[in-house]
Image (tube, rainbow, N blue to C red; front, side, top):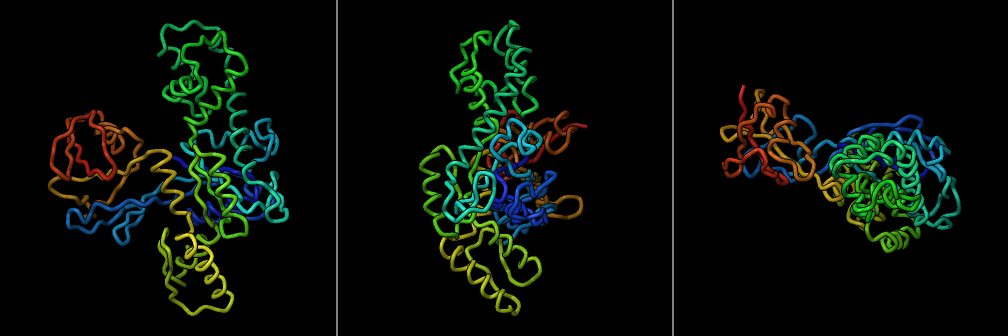
Length: 397
């Protein structure tokens, strides 16, 4: 599972990437700061199950604090996009291609309106961020439509025996933009094209299908960044009104990054998603002013920096993923004595068999049954798992 950060230059996208992953991607306010796509690991919050068993977990990856498990999720930051990217402007095709296999997109928008559509600095509030949201949707739609039109000849004139054969052919042609058979099926339905023969599709049909496929295969969440700057709150409300189908989260990436770095070097204690922090070392005047600004204008005003909430809602709400823990009815420790060491993010409607394959190919190939460790009930291979399930896989040799 991969979360893709997209948006125009200077929106704070690389700052958000660093805030999520604590990697040092270049962070400058000029176009094409990011030359190559950056990949890192962020963490989503899950209420840990350890207390339900009277245990203290010991994660192998991620960490757990105050009963909250922070589970790894891959994040990719790709260089800023400008209008015309779908036609190759600003290396747009290259960057869009890098995002083709992202499961979900976070569109980072400068909610303060202090950067224009090219990512250039302009007087604060002079640019309408609503245009930025529309521009990205349009660019991805045009990109998808271009790929669809280019491949249309491969299957547009071919008679298919049944819907299954059609979807398989479409998915094969659109695999480069992450289109699956399920995505194509849903997109055909959303576009009202299920009963229309491919041979009769016109340009409008292709555009409608492209838009529907984008919504299905690349769900999007808006990160309304720079929420602490003048005018940003009003712009966030305008974005929500203009795009009611999108989740819009106000955030301050620079505040989150500042707090995480200070936590890492021991200056203060800060847990991602918290509404406050505790200073542990003496601060100079500049540090005091900076942290007081964050406390007053971000944390006290909005309840958090918004960054952790953003990633949580992207993974669990927009994507519908669930967290599943492997465990056993007799013991919850692994061979090294670590209690509940793993927690995996699984797609919606994942089954016990899917989870077995996630753990190991042999477990899936030799699956016998599974057990819900919380209530010790046996479950079959087609049993649909729920968020925070603890599952034991029984398998053959």
